[in-house]
Length: 558
Image 1 (cartoon, rainbow, N blue to C red):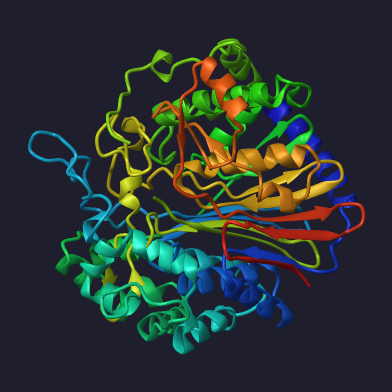
Image 2: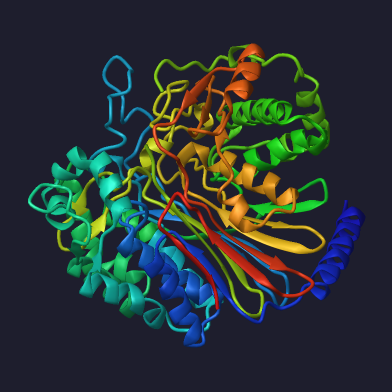
């Protein structure tokens, strides 16, 4: 075993040396985020001598202010980092954790049925936040500037306010009833109990005060002291179960990224407690057995769907927090396992999800998160996906903090086989337990071939993985980031047994052929996702960045 390890290490070092020596420094920097003010915050910190990791702190904090529907200090996320000087890569796991008082039956009635919306709305739906700990860790270990400096743009936006746009209005409208039920959330985010008009100046002085405490005292400024006491008392008053001990015990975790290869393209993504990297790589390993570019577009869609169906099926059965459950990652990502799954795929017929092994069933089937991508002038890079889960999280803001609480507890399995808010089912591997991290679909990812490096990710709940998958398949066609973020989207997640798709994704002829194969379809009400992407040409150092045309973000190279 020792000899194998040494050979593997030597081979890895050889590959790493080749990769590093063959990558041209960008000279400029690129940032793509879901809001122009967040992108500007990142460039501001770079201009003051910060690196990509400092800029990531600034962008994360700015998004917590200007995208309250999508992320915030009361949420969490994953930050995938690449350090240019030595090729070191790591995932910062700032995923939320279940409170110590949580239990597997906390959202069930006396008959063992899930109580509708209890895991989505209100303080009981909130996990212990990881975002503040993650950005403190990111600044201290990987940044060049003090945390207090990198938080300045976010502090300014919170104090001075910013004009809301159409996306804020749309997401708030989707959660209006929930937000209106909490007096503090309604006071901050509504205008006389209504969705504010476009251009409304949103100021958040309480959130600014919480950011100041974070800037002054680091993690202790949030997880201990004045802010912590306010959070706990506010959560408990609203029916939640947080304690001071929950906050004091929270720790960000550094994890080894998960990586694999798709037809000469190296993919690096996030491991458990996100399902993103595993499901993405399993799907791509299945698809690697086909020369997709030589097949008709309809056949490609059929095969991609069948690969997604099988990978999401394994997500439901095997995946959870790897600190609590054993996940057969090596087997799920092996070429032999993929070949076995591939052997069950017919070219002329879709396999009904009910025919897959297992007993998971579901009888009932909104979303938000945010993503940003960064590369600095020396090649340090960050892909980060952050969330409070549903728009405006649980709909609860704790008085005096400005912090909107997540509703990530809905990402656990409240009852085996029953769908959560995203239509996902799961097994006991993702059951609720004290201090357990709930399974996520966030998929911040790096892709790399002989000539290019890509950085990408997106919000979108359970559809995140399929969006990143389609973006990577577009990368494989040597298209630009502008194409990756705009590619028409479709999705299959095992259950419900339908292909979800945007309007205009498929022609009538394509729908007819796929229906004849046995596929069923569900068109989404609106376009979905908000991908942010960057590409580096390894030979010239040239950068290209793109922000999803479905959103209001800003991608720039400076």
